[in-house]
Image (cartoon, rainbow, N blue to C red; front, side):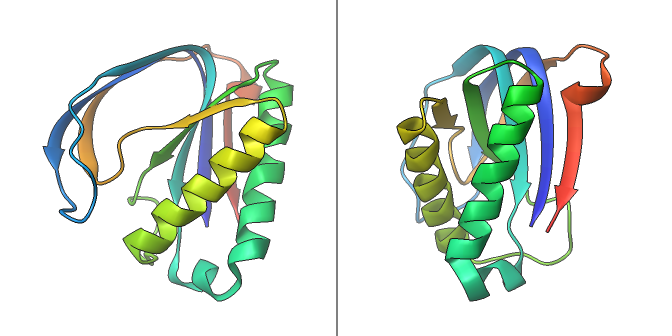
Length: 136
């Protein structure tokens, strides 16, 4: 897994084009303030141990959110961090599991539309803990 976490003063998206037909139609835009946005690429090897991948992802998200003093976390599929890609259905299921765990741990976790190219707006402060990359 590749996990690029960016703390954003403001983050917004607008669905532009659907790239995966198996997933629901979405037309709503989204905006967040003071949020940790996780740009995530699941890799083929992550499918071998979903529970371990889920646990590592949750731990890293909680750690980065605490570093940036936020309870708001946004999961965004970003399949451009590695050449290896997991099955999209595996990835969406993993995102759903992680979102539920984060919400159960008193975080406000949500996802950008899955299977879409999005126009995004990012306003991120120029501080070191605002940009964290993890690979596991």
